[in-house]
Image (cartoon, rainbow, N blue to C red; front, side):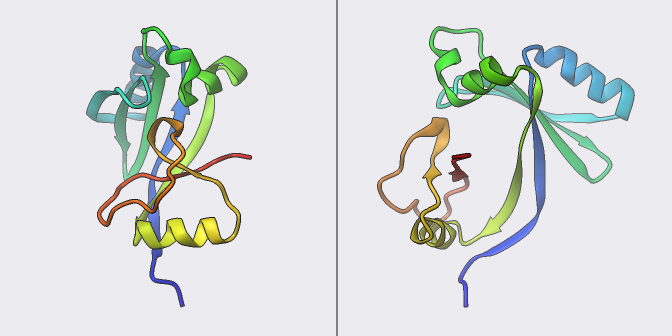
Length: 132
């Protein structure tokens, strides 16, 4: 029996080089309503969240700053260009899921691609499986 549960889709992530253009497209073509715009210093990226009905899309772009191209979003953009990137799921029991993934030899990374050496604290919001 697991002590974590995977819930509904949180958002679909779309990496782009033109965040404003992506936001505009999602607003104008799909009627998206933006409810968050922000910057992550851990990931050196800008992003927004737009609701399209009960669906959420998160366009994100490498920030215009030194070293952003070496962070996960910047590396992805450099390799693949504007492209759908990943999905985010709502999870209860993130520390337990972290342990389960690690026990099954699935690489788990933290914000900005950091390599966590210990289980995230209770209440932690973000872990990522590495694509390899």
